[in-house]
Length: 66
Image (cartoon, rainbow, N blue to C red; front, side):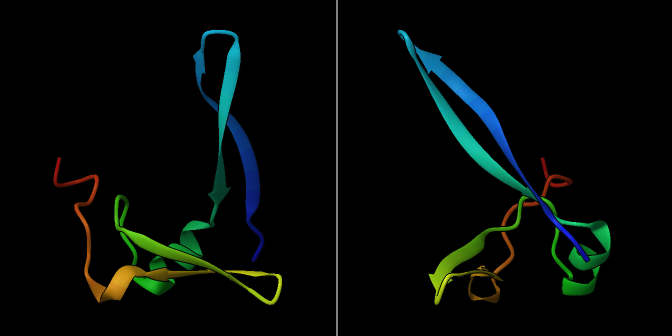
């Protein structure tokens, strides 16, 4: 499976642009992990690798709850 890193303009303030980065993860991976949209994730960098895990097994508010 592959994912894609996207750089998106978050907002402009005065003459400065502020960006955010989004990792697009395939539905297959999300479904296999049992994650839901809006769930809180914990992000760490170890030995040059990005590690993303569900935060303490506690599900956050999902996009379907709003």
